[in-house]
Image (cartoon, rainbow, N blue to C red):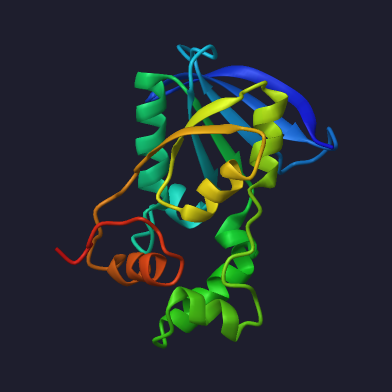
Length: 198
């Protein structure tokens, strides 16, 4: 079972957040995180974003995905409206950065993100959002507005003991490189996206 290992207030360009590290072991260098806005009202439905780690998009500003922009947009929204970002250490849909770069290499040869993972013998998406529900339970959050375009995340909440009050879209416009990636998200995974080709 995971538990709170450490927490502190962290000032960012989007505002100050309470950052809480969750893991089974205090020596875990890759804990999941809850990033809690100062003005969060826990007596009302809490705005929540499940966000999986993406070093290429968040740190190096890759144009292949919209992950870094989604995290920035979520932090801005949460700071302004209150809420929590649950930051999950599930790099590359939970295949890890090494396999992610191998998949990128296959994408350079014409495969899409799903085809590349399958070619490597990996699942199309190996993420598990059950730990996000566990974190919400540890924070005693019972009613949420979920910031997502992903129906799988919605299903995890609906099937849990946390009540889904509403879904809040978090769509980032496509660029010339990310169009194919977002099309795969929509066509294969059923993400609730507008037409990014417009």
